[in-house]
Length: 110
Length: 114
Image (cartoon, rainbow over all chains, first blue to last red; front, side, top):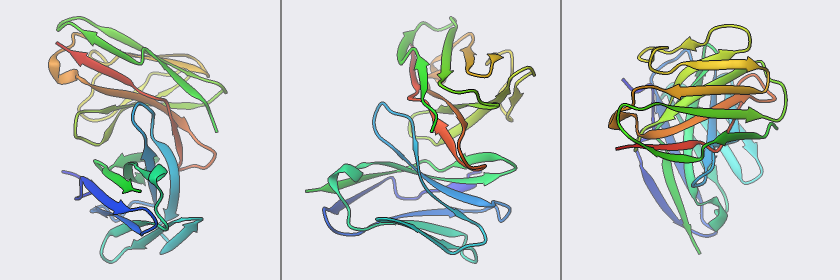
C-alpha cells in the first residue's frame, strides 16, 4: 500500500518552459512534504519542503504547492534548465520518518 | 550540510554470501538511517541507527538479514546477509539535516546479486 504516489514515471519539457511534477498521498497525518532531486550515481539531495499547514512555498525557480483537501502536492520549476534533468522524489514525513514516492524522471531538452 | 561517503560504491556478489556496506559522515550525528531502493521502486527505510543502542528496524526488515553497527557518531555499517537476487538494490545511508525533517544522503551502494 503506497502512501506516497508519483504516477508519472517520466516527464519531458523544453528548456525555458515550466516543469510540473505531481505527487499524491493517502495519510492525512503527514506533517511535512519534501522534494528531493537525484542525479545518476549520486544520493538524493534535498530541494524544497512545505509544512502541512502551508499551501505554498517558493525558493527561486522552485515552488511547491500543497492541496490538503485533494491530498496532492506539486513541484513547479520555472524556467526549466537542462541541468534540472534528474529523478525527482516526493517524500512525506510521519513520526520522524520519511516515506518516498517512486520518483519522476525529468528530462529538460535544450 | 553533511558530507557522506559510502563504500563500496558498487559490487557484484554471489548468492548466499554477505556484504558489509560502510557509511562515513564528516560530522557527528545522532541518528543515521539506512534505505534500500529496489529497481523501479521508491526508497524504503530499512532501519534507524543511534549510537550506543540497537538499531530500530522497519516492518519487513530483520536484524538477522540486515545487521547494523553504529560504533561512533560518524560511522555505521549495514550488512546484507545470505544474499539472494532479490537483494539487488541500491543501498543508501542518510543522516538528519539542519532541520527536523530534512535528511542528507550518501551516494549509495549499487549491489547486484547473481
